[in-house]
Length: 241
Image (cartoon, rainbow, N blue to C red):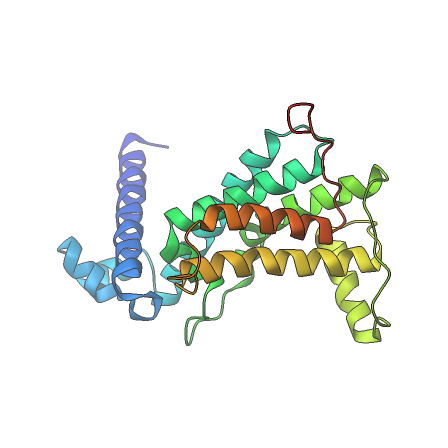
């Protein structure tokens, strides 16, 4: 690459990042549906046509924000879970869940973008899937590892699994829960749903004037959700008994 081309690439990268940062500020101030490339161009002191060379449409910019958000939370969850001993399955689950909540509390508008109400008129493309799966792969790995170690408790189904639900179970198993029994897959999905439900209730204000210690409630709930998923509680230390 010639020096002139390298300079152009660096300038393009820096301007792209500046557009993304302004878009994040817009996201916080006005919401995803009001994201405007023209307003971003105005903030940058550029003609709208110049910004369209970097992001041809609002949806292209939204896709960048979505991927960045999924990658950010995925990286945080991966790092937190990796610090826990491999045979402490509940500890790994709790660390991953805490990392998810910590990121969401720090970045509520980006959390709302990827886990809140769908943006009207926007359909996330296939290119978002890899980033969206990063944290789910971590939760699935914890449960799969516990199953392979022979310590995952698998409850009996409360009612027969329908043929259509069995197909759903197979899709989830293929994606993030290899070799895990059907009922364990179902309980894992319920546990994941509870995890995101807790965070959404907190971030979207549904605990206001009800729950003062949301962090303590979260930890207690995550342990219960982990048990629902079949994970064993760690043996308490002598100091805890």
